[in-house]
Every structure is written in structure tokens, then in C-alpha cells.
Length: 572
Image (tube, rainbow, N blue to C red; front, top):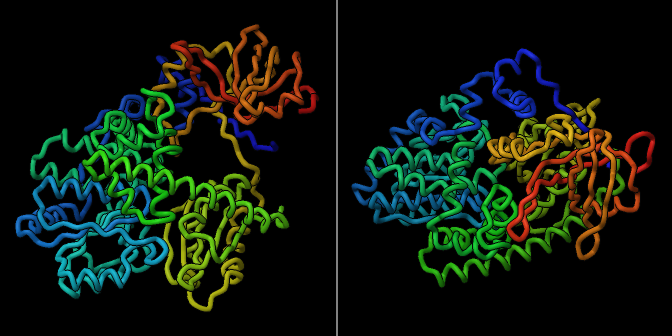
């Protein structure tokens, strides 16, 4: 597969001496994650709910935001929650709406813009509507920090705007906002900088809950939504986000939300299956996101808010149907993009364009291409007469910094280091953007090895794999961005048995033996083609992770193949 195996530096002896209680493999994993003190290690392996979080009032504008919201509730003012159309935005909106209801707000409403007709963030037409409706307080979630003009307009018309967001600071800040709660802006002192929009909304909710003494139980029941957002928005699973995700998964496994329970039951393959980060990433997240990608995110929002089982069943059916349609459209667009880029094998960045491609899907395709080709990728479509691009990046390249260097080309833009979107100014062509962006990519990535990298935590022997090691590895969960499931390398293991499995023989089951004689079962999903290239007795280096195979009440350790190379001059 010509992948670059990047093996972590071995743990220094003086580091290992600081943690004599751990298996050396575990010590290596702690070293790889750059933990330096016993306190850091303890907080990571055994996070505590309160100790693993920061005081929400550390946000510089939190006190004034809380006071303004409570004043609005007391005076029965018209309050509007302005959300976003992805899973993070929908979960954020749900949290704030539920907290406002709990606090006794009587005049509250929700507004989530349509992705294609209105775009991201506050738009001027919606702002005019809110003025006509005599709204008095707007709370944004997962958006707002890039809407200086709209916020000024709302403020000039006697509507206070409290912004909760997690995106990078734009060149022009919405100075007219009553309060801004965003950890990523330059002067914000909140210790965590990379958290989800829902986490920011949760911190506002937490501050309100604690100010009014509503109790920790109500606060914790909000964590199922925080967990979904951390996974779907690819937030680093470190620090406070790790704590919230860990406890959020516990809550999600026993969620009280009628709609969410119906969705989970519908997509669960085995009764009683544990909900993990992978379950969120591949089953819950895509369905919640599908609503805003192809139709309107209100469907997903209603699912999270409803307390009616019949309505919940109908909404789950709608989301499933939309997700199937999204998968079909994504697949078709991806084929078209692959045709467009097939003549650019040595390019450092890739581009695709289709006038009729749905705006809500092009980002998914950009992500697939960027992941497959390990190159920054931009996919363009036309929306309301404007050329809009959605991009995904690779670890070696900060996409939002590149867009900032090209910002003279944009009517608007925003995003993160690994994902961003923009709309070109009128009369600016895609080729003009390509010239600017490609030059930056070339200067940043020149002389870099751009093969797709597999990070390997440690070289280990098959003899090291046992239930004790697996139990220690479980403490590293939940896995996710910046804390991926550990990959290991076993060198020169002998193949003693193998067979194709699956209805179309596309998977591989393999048994390998260490030089010391221990055998271990391996499963290779989508590795069935390897059966034609290997034989019993051949030796291989295998990159794998350690998992459990469960069937009929039995449990056994097995290794999942990540990559595979024959050794000693043997051809794969």
C-alpha cells in the first residue's frame, strides 16, 4: 500500500523510571501522548467529573452573559436561539433550549438556517425578520463570531446578541455583541482552546445551572449531546473534552431523550450493544448530519427535543431515508471528482467542481479524497449563483491559515485547521483561487513525505498480548482525535493459517506465530485480496490494534490488521 510507517521514539529510561508501576507498553503510550507528571497521567487514565473540568466563569464574558439571560427570563423577553445545521450546531441548540425551558423561559424560539439558501451563521435577511418579530435577545450557538455586520445591525435595532462559538477569530470581530463566549479568540483566557461548539454551549448552560442551583444531575444529563458533538466535530480527545466525552458516553448509553433512544435502537446491530465513539461516528452522527446536508436540520433538532414516541419514530425514518440518499449522492460525486483529478497524480492539492452538487455533501467528498490521497482537497459547487468551496486537509497543513492568506478572494469564509469553507467574491474564478491556494500548499509541503502515514505506538511481541494488557489499554478509551486507538507493530511473525471470510470473501482471517512460538488470531477487514499473495510459512511485519471478538457469549482477544508487509525479500 506504500504507506509510511511512523514508529514512535522509544521511551527514554529516565521517563520509564518515573512510572515503574506500568507495563512498559503502557508507559510508551503515555510518553507518546507527552504526559510529563503523575498528575497528568492520573487525570488522563482516571478522569473525575468535577476535577476534569474548568470553571465556566473563567470565560471573560460568562458572568455578563448569565446575568443578561436571567434578566431576559425574569422579564419574559423574546429570546431566540440561533443555531447551525450540523450535528454540533443541532446539539448546541438543544442544550440551550432545554436549559432555557428548565429556567422557566416562556418566550423562546429556535432558528436554524438552511445550508443552501441561507448559508452558515447569521444572515441579514434572517436578522431583519428577527427585528420585525421584536426579538430582544439572541443567543448564537456554534456560530456568530464571524458575523460582525449582522450583529451590529441587530444591536442597532435594540436586540442584544450573546455569541457562543468555537471558531477562530476573524479579522473583524463582532464588537457590538453583548457578550462573546469563544475559547478560540485571541484574548480569551479560558484554558481549553479546541472544544466543540456544543461544549461551549454546555459551559454556558453549566454556568446558568450553577447560578440558579438546578443541581448537578440535570447538568450531567446534557452530556449525551456533548459526547456526540466532540466525535462528530473531530475535537481532540484531551483535557476537558476527554472528561466530558468519557462521562457523556455513560449518559448516552442510558439517555433519557425519546428521539435519541429511538435512533439508537434503530441503528443498533445487536441488542445491548455498547455505544462507543465509533458508534457515534458511523451510526448516530451521519444521520443527525444528514438532515442539514440535504434537507433542513430542523428534522434532527426536533428528534433531539421531542418527547413523543410516535413523532420520534417518524423522524428516525426520515433521517434514515435522508442518510441513504446522502450516501448515494456522495458516492456519485466522489466518482466524478476522481475522474477530474486522475490526470494530476503528482499534485500537492486536489480540486473538484460540479455546478449541481449539493452544498451539504461536497465537504464529505473532500474529506474522503483528502483521506485517500493525503492531500489538501477542495470541492466546489454553485449555490444561489455563487461559487462555494468546502475543503478538508491533512495533518501537515493548516487549511484555515492558507485561507486567511487568500481572504481577498472571499465574500466569506471560516473553519478550522483541518476543515474549512468559503464563498468566492463575485467575478473571482476558481482558477484564481487555485493559483493562490496551490502556491501556499506547495511552499508549505515542499520536501515533505506526503505518503499517508500510519502512526505506530510501539513494536511489541505477540507474547506481550494478554488480557492484562487489554485491561490497561481500556483505560485509554474513549478514543478519538489526538488519542487514537493504539497501533502496534509485530515484526517477522510467521503465517501459520489463513482463509477468506465474508459473503464475498473480501475479508481475511489469519493466524500468526511469534519467534517464541505464541500464536495470535488476526482479522483483516477488506484484506481478502491478500490471500492470493501469502502462504503458510512466510513471515510478515504486521501493524495492528488489539480488540476483542465476541460470539455466543465467548470472548477472545484478536488483532485487527491495519497494514501488512512480507519480509526477507518476499513479494506481497
